[in-house]
Structures are given as structure tokens and as C-alpha cells.
Amino acid sequence: MKKFLEKIGAVIAGAIIACILFLFLLDVVFMPFIVDVPNVKIPILNGLPMAKASEKLSQLGLKTVVGDSSFDESIPVGAVISSRPNTGKRVKKGRAVTLSLSKGQRFYMVPEVRGVSLRDARLKLETKNLNLGEIRYISSEIIPQTVVLDQFPAPGSKLIKYGEVNLHVSSGSEQNLKSIPNLIYTSIKDVKDSLSKYEMTLGEISETIDDNQPMGIILLQNPSPGVMAARLTPIDLTINVISESQPGRDDESR
Image 1 (cartoon, rainbow, N blue to C red):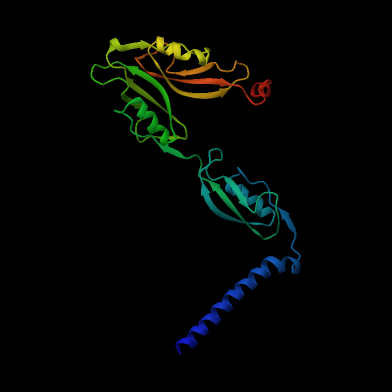
Image 2: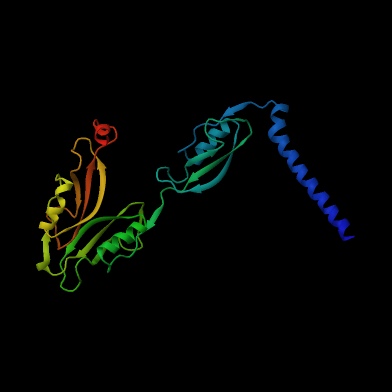
């Protein structure tokens, strides 16, 4: 009896699968040939508010289905990121088009960096996709050099990706303060000598492209020139690199 019931169950399951497969083939393969339904092209929907996109689809005789949502840096909340089928594809009227919508920009929570060293504060911010902003050095007879005294915005605040957090950092005793040298428009090759002379250290180096400026010169620095800071303060630099399209690139690479 048990084996008989198992066979009956297998037969029923097979019949159900066969029916599903038949209906799928009927809808996708055979119906377009049996029923003469006009083709329409999926319009450009990216960036449109969901209501506007749905209206455009309705005018073409298409249905709207709201799909998943995801964060997007450039498309506003509730607007269309993509459609399925894709833009430009021809489909039969009555077809459902699935829209993926934007949640807008992702926000990142500012971590607590007060009481840690400037180096550790930078690392903590980078792990949260945030950048170190302006640094202001304040003398303190109690707090050691390079320890973060305060931060702006406060911990728990939310910023967009790569948003900046400004810091107040201890420079130690006032007698230890040094003036940050002006390194802008100097060559990166000469930086080490200047830093050694002014008792500062080299921080992070980033690159930018400005075809109107010579290659290899410093265009930005942080902290700014003239700021009073502790000895051995790291100075972050942005140097100019040559663009791919600038004449002479190929010659220099040979």
C-alpha cells in the first residue's frame, strides 16, 4: 500500500510539473504566434519618479511592477534606477515591466574618534567611508600631542559617502608648536627636505589632474600653511599628475 501511494504521489507531482512547463511554453513561445499583439519598445525610464515611469508604461499598454530598491549616489529617492526588460527592448502590449527604485544616497554614521591619535582617527573614518577634513591644532598642557580633542560633526551624526569630519587635535604644550610650511606649488621631490627643516612629517599623498599646472607639483595640503601645529605633524598632500590625453604622455612612458 505504501509503495502504491508513493507511485501515485510521483505521478501527481510529475503531472503538476508538466502542466507548469506547458503553461510556460504556451505563454512565452506559442501565444505570441497565436495572438497578434502589437510590439512596443520599453522607453527610457531611468531617473524618472515611479509615478511618471508608470504613466509612460501605461500609455504604451504595459503594466508596472515595483521590484527591489537600492542605494544610488545620483538618482533621487523613489526614482527609477533600472527596468526589466531593459530600455529599448521590444515586448508585447500587456507585458509587465519591473522597476528597480532608488533609496537615494547611503548615509554613514560618524564614529567616535575623540581621545585617539590623529592616525587612528583617520583609519576609523576611512573604514566608515568618511574622510578627514580640516584639522585645527590646540595647545594643551594635559592631553598629549596628536590626540583628538573634539570632532565636528559629533559621533552618531550621518554623512554622505566620503563626507568630511573636522578635528581639533592637541598640539601638546604651547612651546612645542611649529608653523606649518607652505608646500603648495613646490615639487614633490623637494618636500622631504622642507618637512625635515620644519620638523614635520609626510602624511597621505593623493593625486589630481590639472593640465594647466606642471606635473609633480603640490596643489593642496592639509593642514594649511601657517597653521600652528605640533612637531612631527603629518601633512597630507595632493600632487598634480599628467592626464592620459595630455601631449607627451606616450613619449614619457616609452
